[in-house]
Image (cartoon, rainbow, N blue to C red; front, side, top):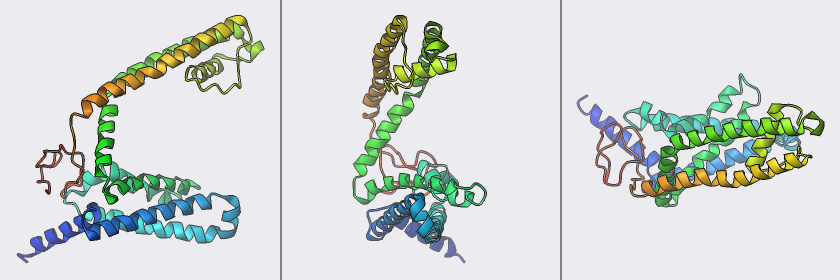
Length: 275
């Protein structure tokens, strides 16, 4: 009995090494096998959505989908068992993605067609960066995430201003053009304003009067200026974020990632980091 905690710790450490780390032969083999399984499962889901293929091979594809779901369910449970604080991993980005990769299959018992959401498994392919030793790409992705996160408040304010503008422009266009020119109501005119200001331009509705065309031209020019604003906001935050590099390994205790490059302890649970 006195050796039981030590044996459990050794077992958990070995399981964590295989599942979370790609530097060892066992860990790399596990990740490669997992990536292959993810790709095959996505292909099966996509093929099952094609009516001709579904009519001929539907039952077989469903069996394949459930086979992968069971496999990923076991893998998800093992991931939780391999960390000392599974709840922290479950709430992390990869933990949520791993759960969402298996949840649609079980939801299909209650909501028909929800298994199509299994394509979210494609997010799990992000682990390919570790397998191919492209960990610096993961670090760069975290820098970009940090920049976007720091820009959220500014972007929300910016979107509020844009929303106000499209409502005003939509109301003006409804007043100028009216139902006789296809602008039957203000919501439809706001839809036109959004499509025009974002420079998408579907062409399903367009102004016919001179005043309407002048307003449309001004909205188009304004659209180009508006596009540059969020880009500038993120660029400034990105320049700030690149000054702080991060480690790409995960905490053996809670599975958390994104620690500073010189971090010795986990920023979430305080557990010592390997290496």
